[in-house]
Length: 81
Image 1 (cartoon, rainbow, N blue to C red):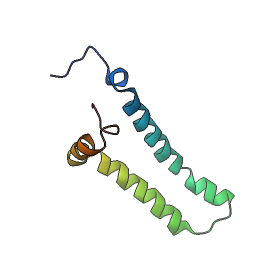
Image 2 (tube, rainbow, N blue to C red):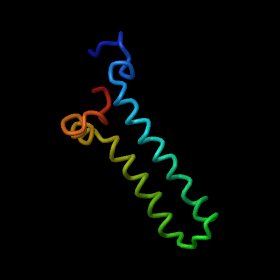
Image 3 (cartoon, one colour):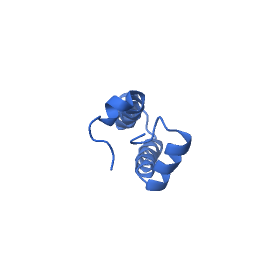
């Protein structure tokens, strides 16, 4: 059982910061269609591709095997470490 006395955000503040920054970058990616319209960019496939890739990366990061990889090689991005 994990120790529930100390929240992980307190125990690992840089990890929480890195995950929040990543989440903000993904959220900003959702504004790409708005920026494309404002900039007069007509390449809808490129914008759609970028959004699809962002969604795929987010889904992949939720996989247990990826979490194990992050825990071993990029612990500052791993959940709960």
